[in-house]
Length: 323
Image (cartoon, rainbow, N blue to C red; front, side):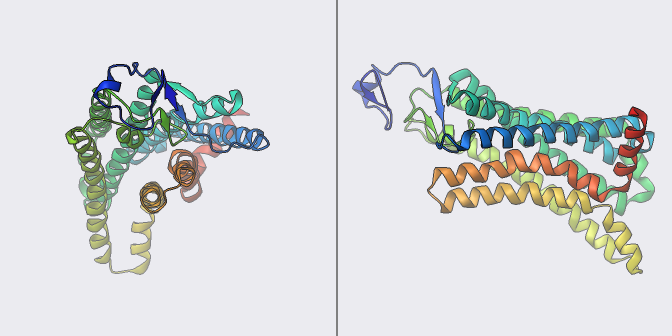
């Protein structure tokens, strides 16, 4: 790809850099160039997006409408559902529009905005899962002090901290990309503005910016996973002290849905990372990215509604009210 006679598949030298225009747009990768596949992909992702939004909205409405669900666990769940809606909305509507219009172009500002929103809600989901793990830890390990510790102001504070930490992570990446002067290429080998893709396009010889960006991402990731692992370590240790088998099952069953969502979220994210490291195919990496950007937000409400009697009951009551 060239622009004003200068190749953009490599970094320009000092002479060429003076003639390189300011970047105004990027080109996203298509999941398939087959014309016959376009209507199928359009219908598939449109239906998945609509189902995801409706499922998560139902969870939010069920929690709001049923006073029995006005507890810390379901407060975090409703925020997780809201985060899932925002997370999938940062990538899929643009992808659906690109499939329909056969356009793969995204503006520079639009790309940075999409990257920022992707980091905010992706990080926020991770932080909320950590808060939910802490909630389960307090409920099982300190049941007598549960209502005192997990009071409404503290729960709201945890959600606020989750958002602020996610915003900080996003702004760090945003500020680093804004400092890029030149890019190796205008082609992003994914269906959205993947932060790692943008960082790899930097032509700067100073690697400090990339190191800082990756360090911030790893730090927040390790903070979340460490919090979850520590909470479940304490939970398992506490459950092992329960004498009866039925008591152990009852205690751990309250963590089943959360643990399933944690495994799905981090499992797909790790799978994408390992896949991108092992495979050099951009198509395989893009397909793997669909797992945590599209499939995970769609399955989260299904997991909670399938394994949770309270959610099922609330959804049933909500359905009866609408009749």
